[in-house]
Image (tube, rainbow, N blue to C red; front, side, top):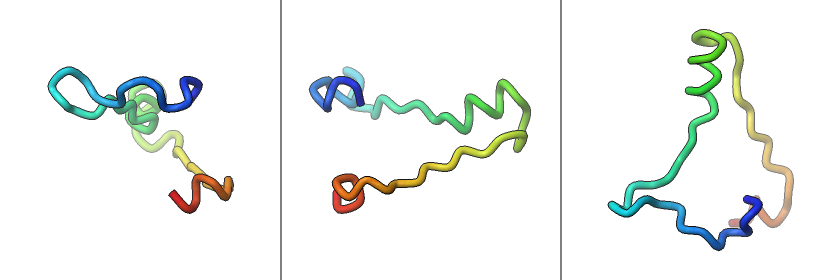
Length: 48
């Protein structure tokens, strides 16, 4: 993230603050018109 993890990742009620990109693309383009793939190749990310 651009904030380097300094902001809370949840709302005031403790629910995660999450954006599901696949859901947004499905709304914009139609169900299964696109597929989100997240390749994790950064060694720092892999071991966390």
